[in-house]
Image (cartoon, helix red, strand yellow):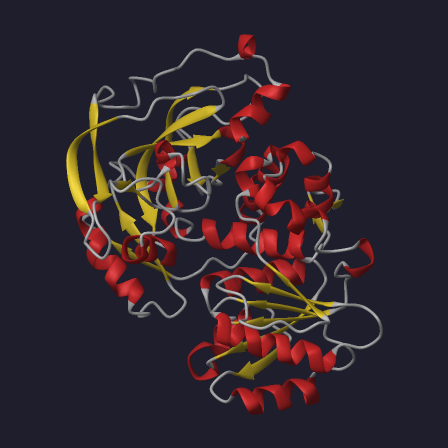
Length: 416
């Protein structure tokens, strides 16, 4: 659907020819095959294949040589549970950083061959865009340019969290943000609603019916974030502050208090005793509390729902974004939202705004980057790293697998 919407506003006669990366920069010509990591059965490790085809470009695509892969919980859940994979022999992976080596795009696309990009393939059914391979595809409007002064490996594990955070706040809660030196306002929910033809049927209710204009979050209102120290929680806090919200962060403070304070969290609450946490919130947060985001699971989502139900005042509904899983029962005065993650690729306007905004935030140093653990070893190292992620040993850190080692300094590469 993303490709169809791209062609709706671009004619194929405008497309440039597929262009190889300049020989003066690349030491070797484009290979005819690549290595891929495939899952063959549930609960089995991924298996390495060494003679797979390079993905083919379609109009609007960039071909990227992968240098680093950021791992996400969905990567091990897919292998264990058999979900989110389009075929029994599945190619997986949710985000990566790399350099553009070929393109078949409209000349208006500002991205250039050789640039470093961060990519978040939310359209997991298109295996050309999966991450666990050496060369992969990203749509032009979904490619996030990495500023020249930023080490690409430092942002390689934040893409999924950023997209989830941006859609949670911008679409599910209707937060208005500003962009550019002139601080121009943009509202992702309004942007999405302008093009109903870009909205798949399974998320159309979330986009058009889940949040009335009178309920959208306004500057000065409070947002409760459970799992504030998670990668997604860290970015939600920062984006919420940029949108003018005040934030209550619930986390294990003995480990994460200093981090959460550095992100600008207004009130911190200890998560080890949720009954006491509820009392603390009642005492510390003045006025109404209408918005919450849970990043952990159904039990904590249910707790957030209880907190909102007790604090809602007036006739306005409260709104809970359940990023991991919704509560098993629902409160009549709480609207529970599921993040329409695929909107990032089905709507080139929503995806384009998010991609360009992240470049700006990174370029202007407006986001504190998450701590990252870099693991060498290429595709061979992914199975062991996923086990670390599954066991919950990362504690708010990102895991980045180094697929290729740049042969010069990152700064030199990003300026090439």
